[in-house]
Length: 486
Image (cartoon, rainbow, N blue to C red):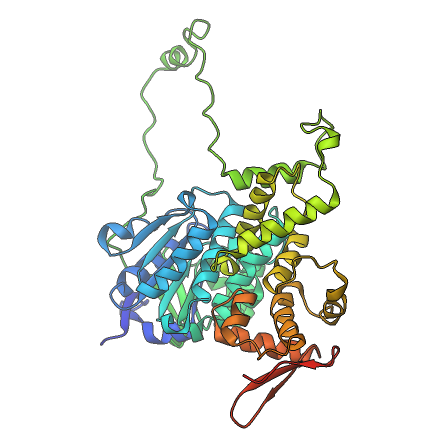
């Protein structure tokens, strides 16, 4: 099978090819100012390689949905689904090798980042048997991997940046090859950009971006001026999948086009100034009132309750909706928390759901138990849910104090597997297997489970032993306990 595709021609009119097999192993970075032709380049790359490799497109502006008109891509309009459904589709995409376009244009920037993070994480966490090769194209990558904080919350920014870092740094072994495009290299996180070995640099005017582009292309600083002089649709290409030396590429034509089209000049209307004034101002006094503004889009119940709970402390005092004597005491609140956590863990897939979805679910269950407000913020919920996965629903009980003290050196997301191991050691049970630890940690990846155990051992929280039969036991030095071998 021919793995080479033509993306355009060089200055002498000779075709310039991209080796798709090599591209999957070495990744691609496209840079250029707005209007330089980045989207056209990505469209050409996608069209030419559509028959060779599975394609996943993260499309923040809805520019690439028209690919579905000519190819077998499935369009996912992210605004129609919640985070759990997006993550589920991400897992199914890897299983069925479907080429898709995740259209995010109906969402605001923070929702786009959260949705992309959930989707990319689902691709990354797919079981090993589904690690088929896939080209993952991310347009406007500086939105999802910003080099500095912006107007979005830190939690969303960190989640999106971590997902992009996984894609570019660790995705290759899982069959995921990132092809990212950005308007400005200075706005893109360096650890994301640095993992690409192939570059297509388009027109840019800022000195800092020209200097970084020249460094990536192996050009001297004085040669960077050539990047400023590039025409629209022309790029300088370099990399093992393109060329060993920088080559000028004029991108070829495409079969499909963006639904937005191009904004060309149009003739102005022929109306005389007086006629135009008449059309603009006539009968304003008698004109019917403008229609009322459209009703806001419906908000999911869980999201609405989360917003309500977050505003409880900042809102102005209002008349209480529940009499003071009806407020639940601390014991009732703890019982409600434990009951909500038990109900959530009754779902065997609960451990693999995104954190934001779990918190919304917890908030709804607390409201259903007639609590006036959600008793835990997100950080406290994260810890309590991790402990509940390990079997501890009331951490205030004295019997857990020593065990939780031994876990103090570990981050909250590792509490569940540690408590699972510690309880097995305390009860003289065999060591939990990788599947049990994976469910507690929220992953189906055996590699992540192995790294989890190795990290806990490096921190001195556990000691791992294996006998000659390959059976594993894990000891807890601080508790002086060890699991049985399994």
